[in-house]
Length: 295
Image (cartoon, rainbow, N blue to C red):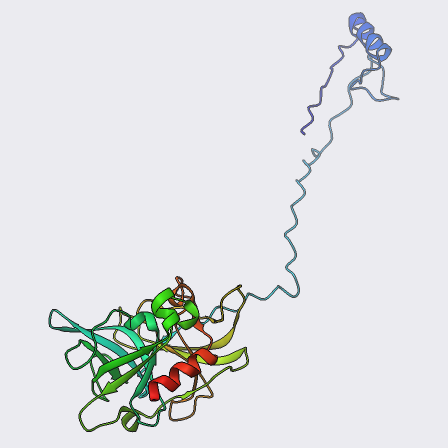
């Protein structure tokens, strides 16, 4: 708070001024005259040859930077576009004469070499077979079909998914066909991993429906802790619509194939946030489903 100073000037020989001084001292008020000042009849002191400088304001000190600033949190990973891999592809349908991809799938090793895996919600209600309109395009990238287009002939899904839409059973095996050919021989295949311990560093691949290139991301796949759900959760951005059915792969080799432990689906049909994806855990239920598919 600023303080204002008052100065009282005394006239030389003035009785009134002297009386005023007495009165001021009587009530204890300050005066401009210090003790030992000359009398009122004396001449006023000569002014100083140089004026007293005004005191400069004290500068506000700048904050001292920390010698060891806290590190910024590591950024979350984001899926990046790549050229694709032979055993993973997009599921297509034909709309108004145009090929449109809508989900992702992967070739799984089987005795007949004709099996593909995806999320059950991708294929539920679709018309399959030679007169159907669902196709699998392994290795698809930007309008190119390096491994051709394979007709999805049939699908095998768990009854708990078909009747109750149980998210723990959001898995489907697809039988694909092309005259005289086996898809696995053309593309290679992922091996099926059942009851794999978690967490696992996983490579997840998907085809966003607004692009024509696949994306992939490597990050930890861990257990999802929510009562009643047997799920895996994976944190990585850019996995939007169209990536459902995308494989969770571990132990990926130079050929691009590995062990598949999940597919994007299950809880929230795979997740309602592009940065968080889910998969049903591959347990005895998926193993039994696989046995039915290859029978």
